[in-house]
Length: 306
Image (cartoon, rainbow, N blue to C red):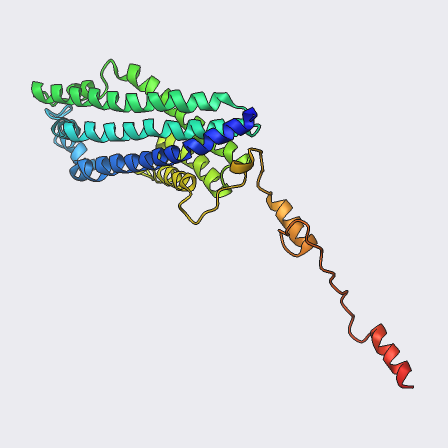
């Protein structure tokens, strides 16, 4: 048994575990995000423009209580829920690492050797999971200190929301998130290019990575829906318990890229359809006869009658 056959056998042995891990990661990310966005933040206080301008309308340059203090107080009172939601999402992020590493190894076996993206997915996922919890714990601690001192001025709110350690935590957290998104998107794209993932799943992974790393787009997608769908779909594909057929590149161990739109179009123009079974003889199609022009067979019949 050569190295390729040994690697294929290892892929088959690990496929079920990877499928369970991918589905579990998708469910954890969904539960943690939904709990944080729709349960913990269900009664999050809103600050309108009129409320923010109230001190100035009354002729006070600096109000005794900053309107943003309601947000800090909310964070202090819901500390347990916020930390629990971040922990669930963090565990889901860690559970995403084994499926991505498995897919990266499968891509490397089929000729796309890119170990960089595997490292990005591994260390970026760890950093994303760890700093998501650490940043939330630090934010809750600052909010509780803010409530304890009972100073609701603008200066106190600024100190609670942007303390001296904020940049030191935000920078590595952002870098880790970017690394994880790049690794996630590139592994998904390369897997599609060698035929391990169908085009829809490969494009879905690339788009999910973009939405995951751009904060502006996250406002339109409070839940990482595309990321969750990709994880559950990939787990279902690896489990083999769905109607979807596993791409042939998984069994052959060779890169079998999907045909491009131009190739499909050329196949339809040449053979009438984009696909034809190997070894099947081409069916001869008679040439169309122009209207008004007699066919050769009809002239022969006329001569015989005479």
